[in-house]
Image (cartoon, rainbow, N blue to C red):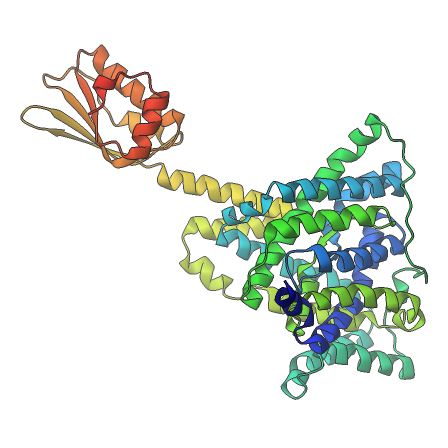
Amino acid sequence: MLEKFKKEWLTAPGTNILAGVVVALALIPEAIAFSIIAGVDPMVGLYASFLIAVIISFVGGRPAMISAATGAIALLIVPLVNDYGVDYLLAATILMGVIQLVFGLLKVGKLMKFIPNSVMIGFVNALAIMIFMSQIEHIFGISIDSYVYVIATLFIVYVFPKFIKKVPAPLIALVVLTGVYIIFGSNVGTVGDLGTIERSLPSFFIPDVPFTMETLMIILPYSLSMAVVGLVESLLTARIVDNATDTYSSKNKESRGQGIANFITGFFGGMGGCAMIGQSIINVRSGATTRLSTFTAGVFLMFLIIVLGDWVVQIPMPILAGIMVMVAIGTFDWNSFKYIAKAPRTDSFVMLITVTIVLFTHNLAIGVIVGVIFSALFFATKISKVDVHLEEMKNTITLSFEGQIFFASIDTTLEQIDFKKYEKPVQLDFSKAHLWDDSAVDAIDTIVRKFEEKGNIVHIRELNTDSRKIVKELSQLNEQHLT
């Protein structure tokens, strides 16, 4: 236990603290922007980012991953805020946490193994495009100065690491270029232009909503959507960070941690949130590997608001936009173009449809779900091909089945069989086939019945152990049919 604590908290503390500082600076405009999208006060998003980051650093399953207020959740809650107000949003956030905690206890993290690689590639690419598109308003159509700051930021981010490795390049860009702005001034937008930042800590209170079944019915659909979207995005982000750091994380613990974080956040005036892939990548690329970086990001975010608020509002947005452009470039899988050309057409289609749905709906979870559905349909179609071969021997007629027999392959299987009267006994050979479900068993019953109606004697042979078991449990056939 002590070794685990040291590894997850005390490995390279200086590097992880500096990485957390960079993430905190990047969280402020994001949290404010998401609050504006949701139609709530900027502090609702800032409190959520502070609380979720700090709480998840203790109870989450993935060290170095950043969780905070996110755009995916903000988009879902717009109608709730418009129709019922902020208190109902906070109540929905609390219920969201409960649902996620239950999902975690039910070990929903195991479902991650059912997300294919093509969907993962689509998810990552769609997110990279969304990150880039979200920064356009802070770069283009403002002034020449904005372009200069973006170019200078990208120059520092890509060049300085070759000479200075101990201090994250994004932090250097933020400090140096903000100093230049404060000293010389420029025609650029700043963090302060996004909204008013209050210098106060969040306080505990119970949302002012009626504790009735009617209230539950109002918030339940939103809470469920928030919980599902938040978990999908969090678990996919965890998987991406796993790959980036060559480590493994507990997806079920992450699910429970997300639930605990959102549950507590709702009582302190924060909106719901989940893992943020952009900030997580900034964190990892800044050298973070431990929970200390996530904890630092949350604590330093609050420090920036309360102590350095006057300085924070002067940070030019083009600097933060430049850092996020770097994240978008690094996030996008540039091998996707080769993948489209070389991968099976169905995989390429799944990847492209995932990207398209995400960009069309601005909802990562919907894109992933649609991608998984299409992938499952293509897979089912691919394995539903069953070949039936008829061979006439001296004493028997043998029908050999080859393939996976289940609900999707029943029709193609039956279409290949000529049900007629044979002068010899009919053997159904399943040595190269597997029966998967009750539909397969029902199909076998149907085949035997149709042959016997024509006056044939039918025997079933070479069923493997699992297929024989399911036939004995579900079939209407007699034992004499099985050999």
